[in-house]
Amino acid sequence: MSFESLGLTAELLRAVNDQGYAQPTPIQIRAIPVVLAGRDLLAAAQTGTGKTAGFALPLLQHLQKKPLRSHAPRVLVLTPTRELAAQVGESVQSYGKYLPFSTAVIFGGVNINPQIDKLRRGADIVVATPGRLLDHAQQKTIDLSRVEILVLDEADRMLDMGFIRDIRRILALLPKQRQNLLFSATFSEDIRKLASGLLHNPETIDVAPRNSTAERVSQQVYLCDKGIKRALLSWLIGSGNWQQVLVFTRTKHGANRLCTQLQRDGIEAAAIHGNKSQGARTRALADFKQGRVRALVATDIAARGLDIDQLPHVVNYELPNVPEDYVHRIGRTARAGHSGEATSLVSPDERAFLKDIERLLKQELPRATAQGFKPNPADLKPEADDRRPRHYHAPRHGHGQKSSRHSRPGSYGHQHRSASQHHTARSR
Image (cartoon, rainbow, N blue to C red; front, side, top):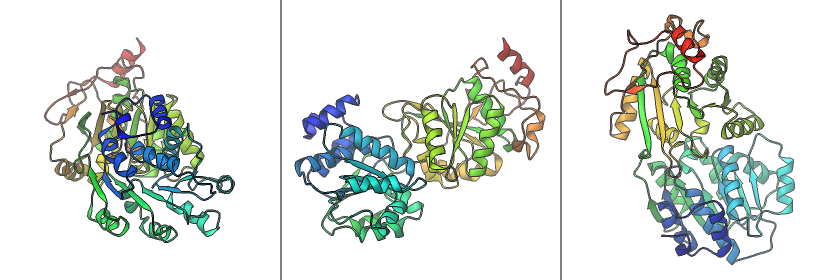
């Protein structure tokens, strides 16, 4: 099936062609006709399946077929995070580049005044996070009375982040007669409850089994002591010559600490989490996408919505305590037809989390060992992850021996080379 067969206008087809897309994805094939028909939609789709185009293209066509002169927005897209709002806004602008519609992206962490100026000039489409949108509503700098289409993107994540009260306050400001589109990675009971109160006779689409992981993601688990995780991560990055890796930690402090340690090992790294200013988060993501940063260390704020083309590696430095978050994390790789690798470093205190993940996935994840890796003895001390090992040198140029996978957990014993041998190999 082609985009032409979905009934899109020439301007939209031209923009899609500019993006290099030849064929629609399954979510686009099923969602676009439903949205064009004016139906409410409840769609389950994993990240990386093309769902943004699945709603952006038909809503742009809706505006094109019913042009109205108004400064008030006619389409409202709600997202859980600033990064996702920015990326959805960029996608809408790209797809609508040959159409005379304006888009405003609204989120917190930045000066509100430029957003107010933009809204005063008029915006047909507003992409927003709930909190900042309510700030504008309270200041009466946005008029939501003419919204014709409401999109809730990553609705399950919004519920997880406690936005349900804000969403209800926003719904009260919208016209009763409107089209509603709800996109979620899963169809949990909470999502179904939200949908029942929001959607009218919706079409339901489920293009991915619940909590499934992308088929093109190769997954592996290293069972290791907590104290050697950082050294093992640096070794994996160096020996595998990984040029772009997204690393997940549980806490903001842990992300900052790991970022500093990787930098000390000679690996360009940046951290991204909720305590960072929006400017710092935007710069870190841009540096990562453009190759200036090799490792992006993130909390789960980055588990959803980050659209990084051809991201080859994701590492769970610490497993999430909610197994569904594992699926969201590794969904950052193997997007848009590309393959990817997800690696988890699992210490003894995380074994229960691993079992929960494997139970959710209905499969045992393959174990891997790092042939040639031998941590410095200082790394095995309980608090070693807070210090830089005295004699460890991370290989930078991929001359180390790559890891091999086995069906059973590995040990870090007699087969491993010493850190000084790694340094010698790297220097040659």
